[in-house]
Image (cartoon, rainbow, N blue to C red; front, side, top):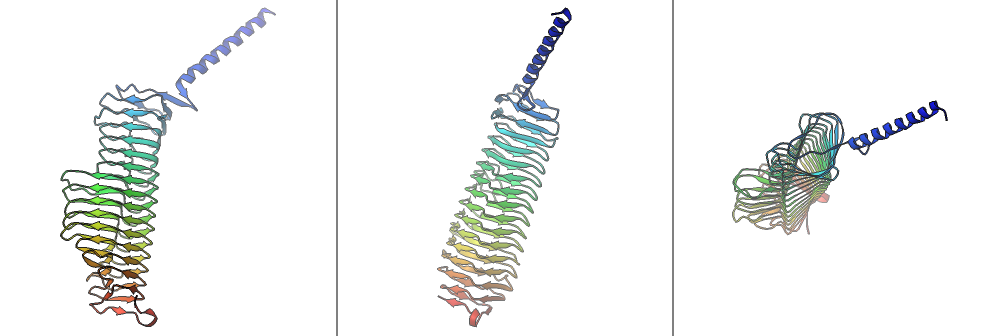
Amino acid sequence: MSMLQTQININRVRILSFCFCAFILMSSLFAGDGQIDIRPTGTATFTISNPGSYILTDNVTMTADAHCINIMTSNVTLDLNGHTITGNGSNYSGIYGSGACGITIFNGTVSDFGGNGIKLSVNCRLVDITVNSNGGHGVELDDACQLTHVTAVNNDGFGIKTLTGCVIDSCVASYNTGGIGIEAGLNCTVKNCTANNNGVTSGDASLDVAGISADNGSVIIGCSSWKNQNKSTGAGSVCGIKAGQGCTVINNSCHENKAENAGKFCIGIDASHGSTLIGNTCYNNDSTGENSISIGIDCGLRSVVKDNACSDNTATGDTGAQAYGIRTTTGDCLIVGNNCIENDGNAYSYGIAVGGDHNRIENNLCTGNNAGSGAGIFLSNQADDCVVIRNTTSTNDAGINLGGKDAYCAENMSTDGIINSASATMGTGDRSNIAY
């Protein structure tokens, strides 16, 4: 072999050795497919200032009074890699990215920070995240964010809080003490979520409690909200689901929510004007105390309330306690195909009660609403020009009470009578009402 050939071979070995060492060096900096390893010390904030994909390599206990991870740039993906970031209870967040957008965080736990568990800005995404025992909200996000399989438990604020246009899918909010399990802003979608045992357990603050709350134009579908409670001695209500104007609320279950102390409302679903409520189940929602009120579904002006089941909602105060299966104090609502059974208030019990003009009440079943005074279907003296047609009532305190103004009442079947003190128009012939 010539000296030239020998030198060439030596150079090849050097090149291969250099490449191998470079590969080892790059492997130490990156994990997986281009992911950059991060190892926060816990004694100071770890700052991410460049876009990219990052992976947490170990559990972190944050001893410093600071955010654990501060994301200062957009377009960052952070894999927590199954690890837990634990705080010392100081007033900071576990992961903070308030000034950046396009952040994705997944697969890990953030707990025991004095502020929010995770605080991010717009167009962010959380997947398979648990936030628990933080002093603020479990998660607080801004607009256009997505949350999937996020679990928020035992936080002192809300479990999950978002602004406009967010999607909250298959999330759980439990035992959060700030009053609300999941709060969504305008035009959000909340689906397949569970909110239970959130609320206010003591004190005299005037706070409203909700398992799930969504602002105007939102869709709430396939969720379960139960055992949320308001024990404060101050004013306030508790709702399984609270929906703003123009919301769509479909196939949810709201049960065993509870308001304690005098004058409080407990409502399975409370929906504002122009909402659509279909196929929901609201049962065993309970209020206690003097002048307390329990309602399965409460809806606003121009709402559609169809094919819902509202049963066993109770109000147990000795004075003025009222229970309703479905209630509206406004007009222009369509209330059709609902079952309202055994809603009982110590003073007043109603299957369906309306207090505004031009409501249509059709094909509902109202039975067993008979504690105290009340009726299966009740029109107040403010309800004018309403239509009550093809309903069935039985074993209520009274069957149908047509109130003090004009109404048209036809083709109803009742064992417990129709009260027509204001001489409403009654159907005749084929449209007559039937006592059975």
